[in-house]
Amino acid sequence: MEVSTPARIAVYDDAAAAPRVVMVEPKDVRSFLEEITATVNRLSHEQGGTIPFMVIREIVENFIHAYFKAPTITILDGGNTIRFSDQGPGIKQKDLALEYGTSSATEEMKHYIRGVGSGLPYAQQYMVDKGGSLDIEDNLGGGTVVTISTHPREDPPAPQAPMAGAYGQPYQQQWPQQPQPLGQAYGQQWPAQPWQQPCGQQTLAGTPQQQTGWQQSQPYGLPWQQQAPAGMPTQQQPWQQAAPMGQPAPQQPYTPMAGMPAAAPQLNERSQAILGFLSAHELCGPTDLANALGGSNATWSRALQDLAGQGVVIKDSQKYRLTSYGQSLIG
Image 1 (cartoon, rainbow, N blue to C red):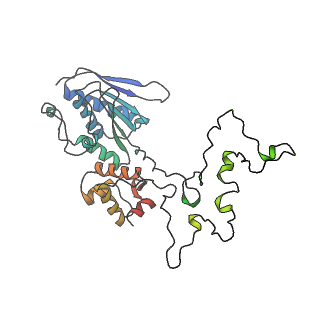
Image 2 (cartoon, rainbow, N blue to C red; image 1 turned 90 degrees about the vertical axis):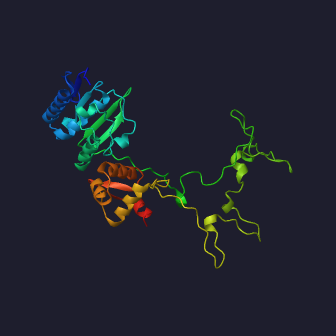
């Protein structure tokens, strides 16, 4: 395995100015990886960053999986955010790449790296435990972008239900509308109404009068505003109808309250395990779940972020707790 292209390290000393670019020229694989790691570590710490050498090395060594095609490192945010990109074959199963023991290293690659599938999971676990984050994305035109930061990933907002109006129903027109009569197209003149006729002009008895669309629906107002003929029962709306003696009142269909997720949450086995843990503990983080239930911190971190996206849990400092909606799911 040979290195044929240099690595480029872009240092953003000033967000308003072009970056300073440091080149690491090709050399043998082991020396190339070591020089990139040492240079990125030095430059990021000169900016005031605190990401440790070991984490940087684990990400740099992944350039070998891209066969060193266009390795590029970007140092941002005063050294506290570092982005590693390449134009290699990319990572299709990004979640699996963050699990311990999964690796695409060939026997040739294992001459230079451990190749046991520990690099990315270790780096993510360290960053998350320290309140930071690690993200994997596709690069433009192919390849991979790995970003590590001392800042946590921003949780997506919980889905919002439509704002509720009267009686808990979403705001909309509360009573049916009558369709506009056919032929009432734009530009046609509406028939004259009785109050628009010249004085002294009367409508012949028995001659039907034309009415506009809004008059056709209810000439005397809405149904509950009309006075029923003597001896006829008064029409009532569903919420006004009294239940027969000895029978419970009819229940209206349930409508989610404003601010609550409109759809049922998607709970897999890990999500249910988290709810079970939080039913007995006020707060939890990836490390708490890994210690109690097994698995990796990275796996539990993704599961917690998924529940946060559904409005089931919310981040409180560095840990998560149930929302009122989440509490309703466990009774």
